Structure formats: C-alpha cells, structure tokens
Image: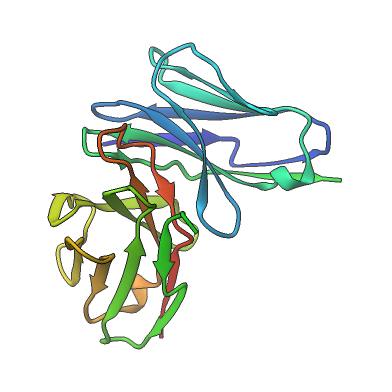
Length: 111
Length: 115
C-alpha cells in the first residue's frame, strides 16, 4: 500500500529561524514528488521534483529529492509569519497523475 | 482569473439530497483531478478525467459518486443521496495535456456540509 510520512507533524518557530520539513514515501511506480503550501484554501504549488540530488530553489524555499532513500526535504530559511501554513508532500503514483498526499506538517512562525 | 475555478465554494445539503460540484480547469488545461479532504485527514485522490474520458477512478467510492468532464463545460462531481460522512472539502486540480501529469494546480475547493 502506498505510504507517505511527513515529519514533524507540527512545528513552532520564530521569525528568522530556518526549518527543515521531511517527507518519506513508499509508492508504486513513483514518478515525481510535489510540495504544496496550504493555508485556509487551495494547496499552492511549490515544487515538483523528478530527479534525485538536484536542488530546486525559489526565494527562501528549497527542496531536494533522494530516490534511493525515498525521501525529500523542504527547507525554508529566514522564516516569516507569512510562511505559517500546512506543507504537504505528495509523491505521484502510477502513470495517471495520481498524487498520494502525506498528512502535512503544520508550521507556525511567531513574530 | 486564469486559475482553477470551483463552485459553489460552500454547499449545504440534507441527508438524501444530491450534491453537484463544478470545476473549471485552468485555461489551456484539459486534465482534471478530484481530491477529497475529510476533517483532520489528508487529501485523498478520487478520480482523474480528460475530456469525455475517465482515466483513473480508483479512489472513487463504488456507490453514489460519479464524475464527468464533458466536451464543453466544467467537470462535475456528483454525489447522490448524501450522508453525513460525505461532509468534506472537495478539491479539483488541473494539469496541462502533454506535460508531466503530476504538475497539478488546485482550485479553492468546495466545502460540503451534510446536515
């Protein structure tokens, strides 16, 4: 059965801190892994990772995939209160675009 | 607004009624995915559709749920004879034909409440 585990489940930090969010997965026919940010609405696309070891960056966020060890991390540097959200990891399973979502990491950034 | 559109945003139904949820994909996208998020749970895949075709419905409950994506118009997720356990947020996502199908962009969701 496909499985996605994110850790930690929740995290409270102060502005300026750096955080690392973890995602381990076991899915059949893995193709790509996606990270989303979810506030009180739609999950917002952050990254799609397909190749191992290649870091993707967008501003203060970065992410990397390890297909051998079956995990991915999402880093956020110099956190801001606007980074407070649930971060979702979702590897793709099969060839049909099916995303398997983890339970999410709830990040709270305090001023 | 070029993003994924869903309506209604909130829907209240009594037990036994029908619920119809609509999704218009991003401009230029022809692949639609429906996910359900039950309270305190993660998003769960339900169905993947292309125009006039259901590609993967492995996550759809066997009874009362159906989905379509006609040649013209939005995709529809239909729930017949709703029960309290159907109360959830239903998200639609879309992707571009010919690209990586996992690069999906989500709509704001429809929050269904069954009373």
